Length: 139
Image (cartoon, rainbow, N blue to C red; front, side):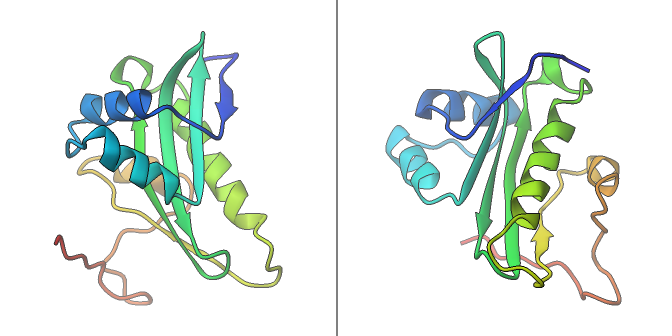
């Protein structure tokens, strides 16, 4: 576990693009990245020694549904608790939503092989008899 990791709720466009590139995610222009960040409900970035080393973003309706996306930690910092800290902060954000007494569902798409990481936080693989099949369309 890395100590002295600071969590911030903002990230520069350059840091966002660099993290995406490190993970092999779809390339974005700076203008596209700005649009993505400006339309994100909750940004959670891990900073160590002045450098952003991990990031997540959450799209949330503040009631029943949240989508966790862009869970990225630089490869040299993976396995050191950074990703866990980011996931915990997102779950905490959803749990502390303004509507009490409502159960919210957090969904995500795990990269192949990363499912066990998310299972530690209670995420379940789909298809699931209770919730149906996970589905998506890429447009």
